[in-house]
Length: 171
Image (cartoon, rainbow, N blue to C red):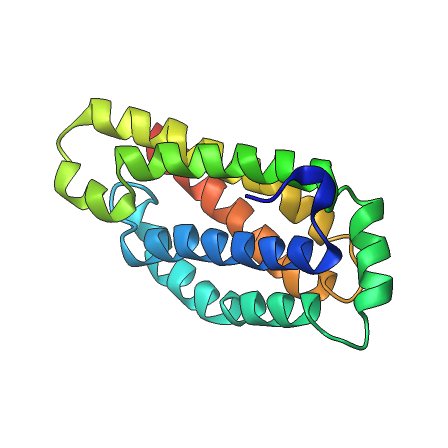
């Protein structure tokens, strides 16, 4: 990763787009393999909601690279701690949490682990860590004009998945 002090506005926007794709992949995995993570009664509605939400990732990424809004956008990102050392720190925390989850095994791998409570206890801890670390950046992005309308539904879907996972863990 680039030196935190020297990343350009363009690099910050590229890193944010990469972050959004990583969040999309984590959520897509749960949508495709929800068993034992989200209670069964929510699978169908979650898949339908995902169909509505998924396109917002492309809209948010396109908004981050819209040449008509870049000067204003870069000021907004800076004001919300989404550039330079602050962005690098937040992304490093998210990356750490995501790599812990990937090392342990994602929802897809969990389909094979249904009978192993210890595996699921660790999975939920790692999964929750990814969602929590993602919140930091999503909350800030959801306050950036031009990006907010696309990010807000992503953020809310992620929060619903998090709540559903809590119900699955408790059940």
